[in-house]
Image (cartoon, rainbow, N blue to C red; front, side, top):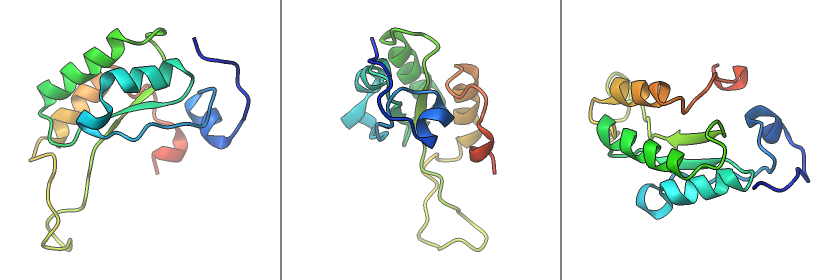
Length: 122
């Protein structure tokens, strides 16, 4: 169970969390269980989605949700999205391997995002 809020910040208000602590999405180094633990403690647990197929990401989100005390608690999914093609540097790489639309669909379909806060949609 998350402890009561001690520090109120724009981050805690934006994400409706008790503590201004956000876990970095680091794929296997910080997977679904750690992300769920951070969310359960009142922070924002985040899983990394780099290199995952949509099915793999769906499995990671399902595992995270299994460990949430409050199934509606917020958590995040971290994707690397550098600009590729056009005027981007030639060394930039599409880490989603052309599967960005599928990954975003999984994030939305699994209710990982809720509604996007206005500050993040600009």
